[in-house]
Every structure is written in C-alpha cells, then in structure tokens.
Image 1 (spheres, helix red, strand yellow):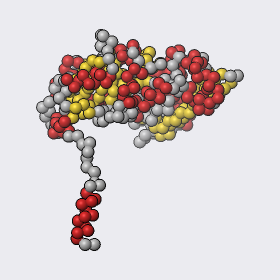
Image 2 (cartoon, one colour):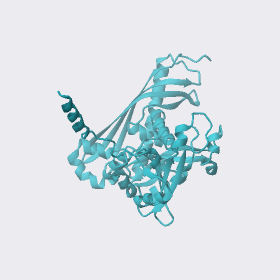
Image 3 (spheres, helix red, strand yellow):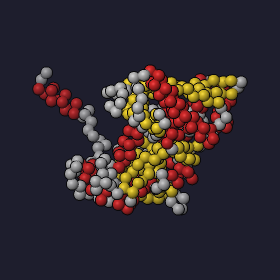
Image 4 (cartoon, helix red, strand yellow):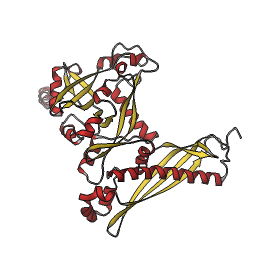
Length: 398
C-alpha cells in the first residue's frame, strides 16, 4: 500500500472513533450517596441529599487526622420528589449526580401516613437511578437526621448502613436487604407484602453531625439497625422485633447463618448453636377449596459455646439438643406467621406460592387474598442437625 493510501485510510478511520461525548468532570458534580424522604408540616415532600465530600474522602488516610466531615446534607421541600430535587439546586453549587447513590431512607412518619407508593415512581423512572438501591426506614427519627450523622469507621454513612444490613442478614438474620426492585414487585403483587429494615440513632444527635463524632474512641452518636418494618398496601403498620424479625427470615429462606441459644440443665441460654446452613421450602395445597401451607425448614449447625456440664460425645445428648433447636426455630417461625395473619399482611409470600403452584385457583383468591391469608392453616416442620462441636468435644471444665 502506498504511503498516500495509508494516510487516507488513517484519516478516514479517525472520523469513526468516538470520544467521551457525555463525560462529566468530578469537580462539576455533587455525588449523592443517599437520599432521605420526610414529610413537612404542610404535607409536602422534604427530600434530603447526603453529598460526598470527595476531596476529604479521596485525600484522607485511614486512621489519620481528618480536617473536615466526609458528607454534607442539603434538603428542600416540594409537592413532588422531582420538584424538591430541583429546588435544592438553589443551595448546591454543583450538579446533583445520582449514579453513586446506594441508599434511600424513608421516615417512619411518611411510611405510615403517606405510604411508599407515592415516592417510588420517580426512583424507578429516573435514568440515573439503579433499582438495586437499598431502602430503609428511619425509626423514631427523621430521614434527614439519619443522613446528617458522621460515621467514624466507614467514611460514608450510607455505605455504613448498607454494609450493616448486608452483614446482619448474612450472620444474624433479624434484618433483610430490601431494594427498590423488591418494593416495586411487592406493590404490584397481591401475593406478597414488603418488609424493610429500620435504622435509628443512639446517642447525641447534635454531636453526631460534627467532627466530634469522628474523633472520639467512643462516638457520642451512632446509627444502629432496629427492627423490621411490616407493610400492608404500601403503608407501614407495625414493627417486628427479635424472634418475630428472625422468624421472617426463617420462613422467607433468608437465613445464611445465625446463633440460636439453648437451655441446659436448668440454665437459660447456656449453649450457643451456630447455624451454618439453612433451607426453607414452602408448599401449598388446596383442600376443599381453601389453601393450606406447609413450611419445611432444614438446617445444620455447630456447637459454638457450651456453658454447662453435658456429655457432647453422647448421641442422646446431641439428639436432645437437636430437638430443642428445632422447637426454638419452629417457635420463631410460628410467631411471625401469627403476627402476619393477625395484620392480614402476607409478608411471607404465601400468595405467590399459590399463584405459582395453582395459577387457576389463584384467580379466585387474588382479590380477597389478605382476608383468606388470615385464616389459612400453616404447618411448620423443622429438621435441625448438629454436625460438629468445634475444636474439642467436652468442655475443659469437665
């Protein structure tokens, strides 16, 4: 090929190469890590934004001296979520940028009085939002106040909350990761209601938003997970605590690992069982025109701690512990089933099971499912097995 032809080809190809036509400079953007939704006294949306202080996060060294807070919060009211967002531009000097958002915080008051269906539409419709963003409820505090708290370990408070929920679901089981997509599916389905983890503030809220919260070995304020919010028709109606919250995870097959304490020789909670595997199967059946359900929970665990004198090498002792463990898990599962039926809120997805297994019958139940669900028979069967006793069999005290 002649030199002239090579030049011509290269010149032509250069026109086909695309550049970063939609590139945006970091210095021109306000990166939003979390969005908070509250209700004003006038009945409007109050939308808050947790903006990342990018310079402080990028230049600060882990464990080193911090010269400024890592996040800043701005808020504005509006008749719609989008109006409130646009109003915030009067306060924020840079363009609000949502692709890095990882958390939506909804106040308990808003979730009870207005319902979440009023605000989810914009989050699903806007092209900058992902539908896998986590959603939580601010309990006994406003969403704006949650976003204001500075995190001493995880630099961005939104990341701290999302990590806590993911870790708690994985190793404890009383909290559940709920994303925008989960909320939308629950709102459009008559066979399942939604649950969300609650977040509250422990400590001094005034100091929680200052540098003092970053520089103390015992922070004056911290954000903690607190309960599981139960929704019906898009509105928060009550909270699930303790065994009811973990019972929800048992039935929904969301338990990956947890700790169950058992009694021993008259001593309460003397043996700790680490659940290492769990699987739940919900089966539906139609008997005389009415649905019935059977929840089968299979789980395996290890003895993690034993504060009593028993012979763990004995097959009979292990069998007794397995029976006790099965009974404890069954009690937790039945407790949430009872609450859900009392509230006529199928947070356990039994309606979806009927729809999947008996689609023709579901057409008859769909419009009255909340009423039907409250009276259905539910049998819970737990098969618990203890596999190992750790690095030793019996305690050194024996």
